[in-house]
Length: 404
Image (tube, rainbow, N blue to C red; front, side, top):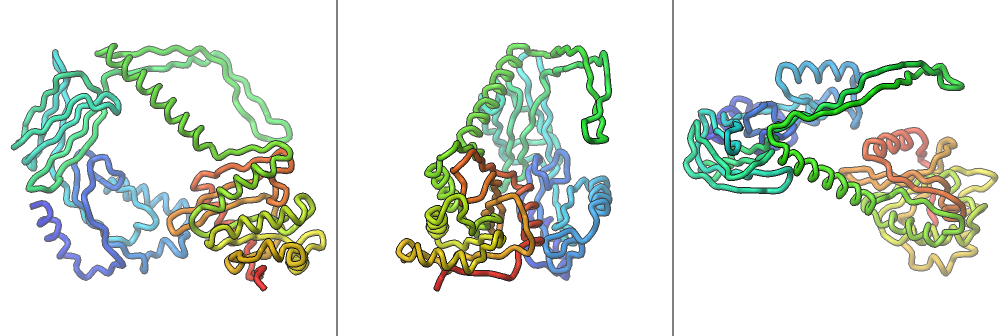
């Protein structure tokens, strides 16, 4: 029924030109869903060809202009429009079902409301992320009440009708309110040395209290929150990609570099001293090139010609010393690109169609591991921004290769 209604609406717009179509079901908590309580069927006709706001993956309007557009659409449609989504045709067919939670003298319960309530409901009562109870209810109707046998602070619910999912939501229940109060007793202003920037330094008294209808439940929930936070923190430690090297840890440095060269996609290395042998010597350069050729994905090394060291001189020196070491290596996918202008910081990027993963290095590859140095993973937004700036500003058409 709901799908038929959606298709009837779509027929009105059959002349709309699109490059491809995305369709499916959005639950109540989905970021693209403009409805506060309802789930919705959704179809988006994507028009990338005629999008005047985005050109070559860049905004064709100012940030302020796009902010005005975003706020306008958000206010009147409750839809978080994106730059890439402008010019698309989006059709929503909401399902008029919502659930309400109630406290009682025993345990809280739910009520299903709305003209579209029908079918089979599956409900999970939870304490944080732990499922305490799960139930299946057949033939639910408007006003249907669902009771549990225990105390909980959130629940998940799905409703199916004629083998189609028509409602899905997850709700957290406010069972307590915690208040942290800070009273300012003194404020003073300081100017940072060497700048005109001023900051406020404050002193105050802090206090906190909790208003709750179930102290026992709150204690358990608080414990689980702390435990979950600790688990996430430990996972971050396990995957820590901030790796610091002491002096003379060249082997460890090469192992880290080998790991990075195993990343998928096209590898981009920005290192102004990539072809210099001042620190690691010719043997260090040979090791780096060998690791670069370990996999056959394309590697691009953006470098500067400094201190009289040209690429031809670099290649000639390698050829004289590394003919045997390079035998059998896939050198044709290893590109050396001369920078249009000098730069300082060193970066490694893995670029795929879907993402750019970036790392910043504290020193050049030829000296990495000789002295105290670090390599740090960048967040996704920072990686993309830095890569695009470097690619636009310093990558030239002067491409060289070690292959004979």
